Image (tube, rainbow, N blue to C red; front, side, top):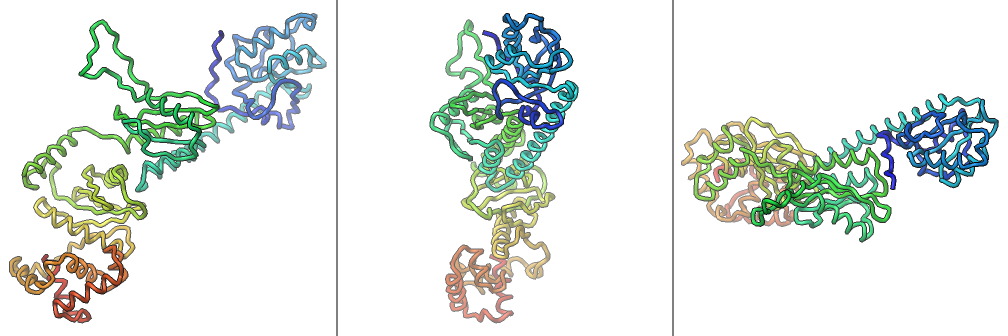
Length: 503
């Protein structure tokens, strides 16, 4: 069986677009028609066997110079058309001048029999004009393809910067290729998907295709192969298939971590492959685990902390210098580990902790964090390792203020405070004396601190603490009763704020 010719790497153009050119006055007189008939180029030949000169996908133009006088009574036209079809020719254009006055009837019948579109080229239309029109259409299609790829790259990059990067990238990918995009985990389970899900048969076939690119590239140590057995072939980085009229693609992500991107779409062209490759790179960055010298140092620091080392003893493993603590909370959904890692990458630090609905990031002090789309951030002042717990508290308070004031990023103030005028012991003793009745109640002290920082706003305090405004009123009233303080007095508020800063 002969091999199917490979099509040239040019964007296809519909044959109907060429027929729509009124200046050419082409007319289809035989063969199939419709949007599925596309051209990849144009070629002129008067050879009786054009097979060696075709790449596939061309509109072959001929004036019939090669046709013998008695061709209509034999198999000449059948042989001629069959060779064009075998070479992958997309259509045949026959010029009715200057050799022939009409298209031979036997040629029309042969094109009908072999399913080859046949065009009649009128005398006033030159072959060079037809070829130029084909290449103009291809150039226009190429420009459209490049624009589509560029827009897709921009939208995928923007999706990767969102608080939910993986679902966002999959949604954009599914929209751009007009299909279904799915991320499989190392165990083969579906982690996330977007787009209109295909039939069960297609989903199962895509899952099997994902296993092809996930299979191990070498035997495990527990089952070594014998010296005589051949080494297993490396797993491919991508694979394609087609099931029930649906094109399937699978892409291995990262460097063997086991994540796979799967795509099922009704059509597939070079632009779709380029768009999918961009998405695969972004998903590799979002799901990948980067093992480097810095990663080993972070692991060592964690182990030493767990074994009882002080923060200042392991801080050099994380890099010299003081640090800032950033608390971040997404504006919409609860963050997942991938979103937390993406935020850390955007801020420029791999030191990320996901604790409930808040993400904490430890940054070098010389790195000024910028607002992140979809996130609300609170940033501490620079701190050395012994002060990191205090910086963590600063970042938490800054985040609460940012959420209450609907500000994208709030930094903890670093100006000198009144407490700096007093010895630390005396300031702490004064704070204990002032706040003694409520010092042991975290809910009361946190509410009082937040309420004072927001200038007595009940609504903003409720937002910052994620409680009802009536709860805030009850707690502040309780504080006023226990402390025997007039909360409307600015001097009282100032003294309480001074004392709270010492806790």
